[in-house]
Length: 620
Image (cartoon, rainbow, N blue to C red; front, side, top):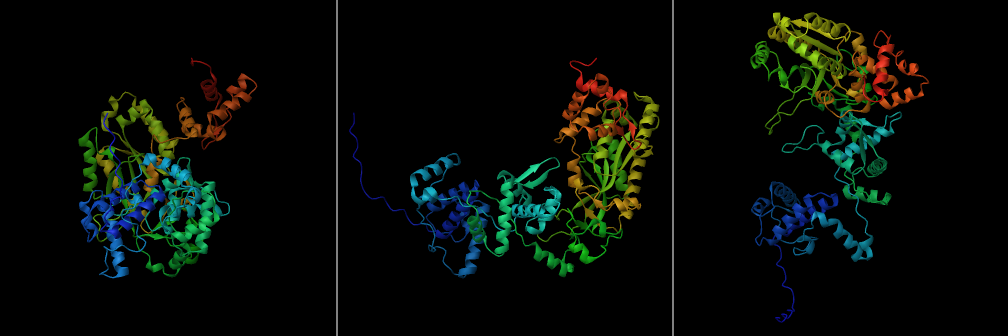
């Protein structure tokens, strides 16, 4: 057995000093800040620190560091910005190779050891056990990000909503974005150049930290107890120290809070100054889009508010963003299914006819309907950007479902006919149009009698309340769409359009419709198309309605009438259990009234529903 080699005793060789202490200091600060936020980019910064410590030559700027491992465009850009700031503060000839005051020693262990993500928790626990003294009792710092970013604006907006008397306690996405925008420097809808993230991206962090809760579909956002308490303290800290930096705000929060919270907040509460500035200098705003807190009821058909002072100080309206006359154009939207698949020649003929007629149209995916019209905001290209900013789009109240006779026959057989009409009624647009192409003598060769198809078309007009337009072929369909586009362009020519949320349907615009004027309170295209998704997550009430509509003879109006009394299967079964006899159960739904004429549901349909939900075993 070989003898054990003697242990060599002696002093450790001193590590050479880092020739780039300023870059090392900045990278260490970035790493520590990311570590406080719990971001995984801390490990990237740590790898860059390790590479910089091993590099023996001085660097003149951050671009030279690209040759080092783990130095990408992002890190080099951050270091260049810090370097330019350093030159402005200390002079153009200031040395960057001397160790600044307070810089960490280049050979320090925390600058050279990277902590694996899986061992981070255990290592922190061991430090707390072995450190003793103040280190074991040190409280985790509460994180407050820089002001005027997305999450901070969202928190303060939701907090202000809770302070409004009679508040519903939650906000929808569109109104939350509109109300929080003036508290944030970044856009909630358009990402910055070269980035895919918007200010809205920080909401997922607020939900993850249990500060904001997201419920229902469409989504409703509200503050949790922790988020409400934190937003209240944050608003109070901002009032007492409106110009304070992050450290000042953090110190005020730590003075009022003893528990440990990890917070991801962004933004500011300085909306009063901005409102005052807008009130005094309205002409300095951009002419294309005007954001005014105006009441929908105060807007005339001419698009001008009744009183400028009233419009700037009246109660908050969700999504109160206006498109002024001349700042938008009417555009036809064509579902891409109408231009691809099937008879390609026939579908391309529609596009060619629209182009020949000079119609301004766009082909996109529509989750319901085949054609609709949007008011698209006119935006000017921005200097230095490849593409012009994306303008807002508000959906007009008209939507078209196009049917050839053969397609109509197939949809009646497979059940799509009723479902499509039901979805068109619920899409949020009040003027649905059924465009029927007769196809000449082709209807005589279909699997259903022509009388059945004609009866279905009449029912669509009389019972469902759709406007039915009959045409002979694709060319007449394109002509009708052309005429409608020109008609809507003239109809909305001198009107101010106001963006509203779909959930607040009916807030304004109803008086205009009663006077025969077009509704100027419209929803955005993004919200409309998202709300019309066919296979989206559904509530119990919606699934129950779809179940009822599978029964022969039970239309959407009848299903809606049943849901007014029994919103879930459980409530219906509970009502059946409370009945004393079999006959009473069968007639439970017979007296429910439905539709405009308020007719009774009837005993036959009531009996069918009872048998479906209460019969044990297979139905006979």
